[in-house]
Image 1 (cartoon, helix red, strand yellow):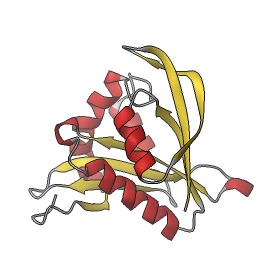
Image 2 (image 1 turned 90 degrees about the horizontal axis):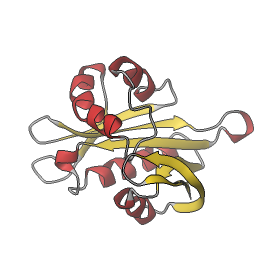
Image 3 (image 1 turned 120 degrees about the horizontal axis):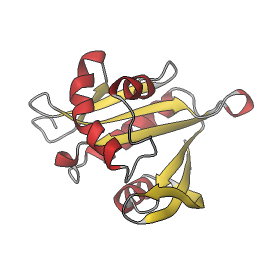
Image 4 (image 1 turned 60 degrees about the vertical axis):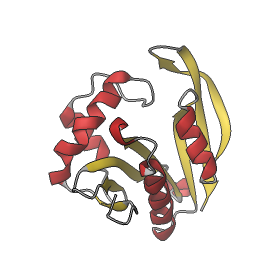
Length: 168
């Protein structure tokens, strides 16, 4: 956050990657909220997290320059459905509940609109990730459907996987 308490969201750079991976790795390894293979390597993660244009990768930067969270935004579909965007988010657990996810969500939605996308679709929101579901709902996304037992949670077993949507 900046000195005013307003989160600073900016495009991520390759130099940000070590600080990003420092918290992303724990999220990936836990396997509770993100649908990547829990054995994803740092190199694989970096390739997946930095999409080609029109994709973007963002970070939220704290007042001391620390990376608090990150998101990426991508074209969700091709061809006749290429006007739909998607995004993924990871917030450093040490900074959760402080508006980092909201700042990223608002920024990603605004950027997708500016990039000419007509809608945002989240393909895989784990239903037990209730804080994220509540945040996305507060930003205007709706659950279109839930894939029953679509996610194998390491604690809760098979749980639903939401598909969420919002027009831009």
